[in-house]
Image (cartoon, rainbow, N blue to C red; front, side):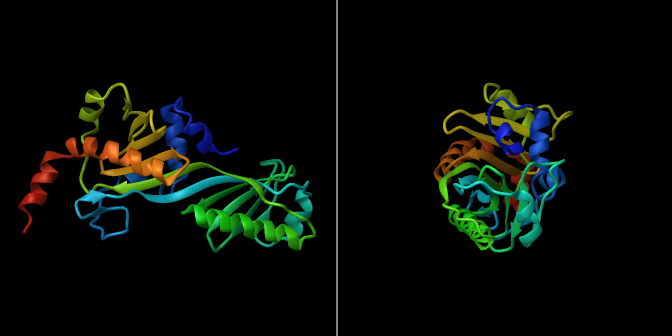
Length: 237
């Protein structure tokens, strides 16, 4: 249904990791670029600790009625339908900024929301659009399949050393993918770390899973932050 679902299965390859990163704003270039100083609430350092910021939620919902996709695409605003490429209508709304894949079966995939509340609001708005077109949608089976979060520890990370000290959980092949892939078992989260200090967490179904994973992995990241970078920070006036 979405590339993210294959990615978070814990059996993905570095090529799948690259494909996932390409779906994020700015792609790999944004994650490998050197960090810039940031303030609170921007996924950066705040009071000495980094807090992940949710950047995307992928959820599904069932509207409980069959849909005529061509008719929807013809009459709904901000909707497109190309059955040769995808057997779903792609519909977008601005507030909250989200995209829906709407299938003839009545299944709908909502992506782009930055909170569970916004994801649910978006699902209702897409349902309302279908209602205006003459359907009688009943939104059921709302399920979050994946949450993606990011943060920036504001200093380089020694990925090679980290991988060598945590071989059971880490995969680092810089010739194939610029990030270290850290597979956490419980909670079942995949964490991508980049030399730049930027970190992406994906595979969570609840915000609590992201927070728990971060509490576990952040001390490890701190242990392998660049010594030269930390020294320069300590020498700053």
